[in-house]
Length: 409
Image (cartoon, rainbow, N blue to C red):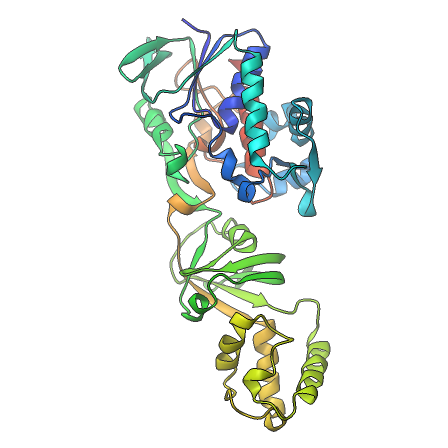
């Protein structure tokens, strides 16, 4: 018999295991993959955005779903604690734009190696089992252990830290929600959060592979005309529509993921107001006065967008630049400032960075992460109905709730 069983060797489970071991508990960590931290390896485009180096106020402003639930756990283990934790494990960190924190090496692998080293250093108290848990056992209203690959393992405390449903190939296949339901917990319906979007417009496919930098993306709810998000940064055109940091961030501001309800407006030239942009267009046109319109946009736009913008402008591709009217130039300028993408749909939860929904927070003690329904049962990380915007906030949630569960187990 061991003191604690942890199901899931991701961010929350690993933090809980190390924390519980440091408080003298013996831990059995179950991870179905051959290696812990598999999903950590792909976070932040393989760089691992471990946390956000922000104030407490800023942190909670970036938690749109059930942020209050995290007050106690974040107070016990905040962003600065996460940074200290990894630096003490030998991983130098750096803070980038938006207070995002990454390893100096830009290698997510270093974060996983640090966790593996931490587990190895506590091998007298932490045992890692590469086995799939199929059931959580209970006896007289409290947990008593788990069954993994036909074998029963017993412990008075069990933590479910299985992640969400996103990226199932990394092991996040939704087992935790099944365990929670079997134990009497309510699971708020799952939805993709931080997810790419499918466009109505075919021209997005034409621009597939094009990454736009230093553009402003605005998300609008067409049901009421409300602006839900607007930020400058980077986005990407794909075979289905749009993705990239700005698009993922924008999706995190959507609570009702309804088809054909939202639109994205791209300002391709956010540094230029309309007057300045018009002057720029007139200057470019003067330099290309005798050229065809399609051949005059090279300094203004990336090559993949030139035929798209030319077509959307309504100006004939072979029209000489010196014949373009002021009205036509004004329409071109509007396109550059307000290029619109209609959101037809969202990609599946399998492609979402984060799973929205999860175990109902009203059934979990926010200070300890222990179930209010089953003694000795704990939850941490993405399996809980809490999610955040991009920028390291979701991993910090995993670390804070994992720490709280670990210290209380």
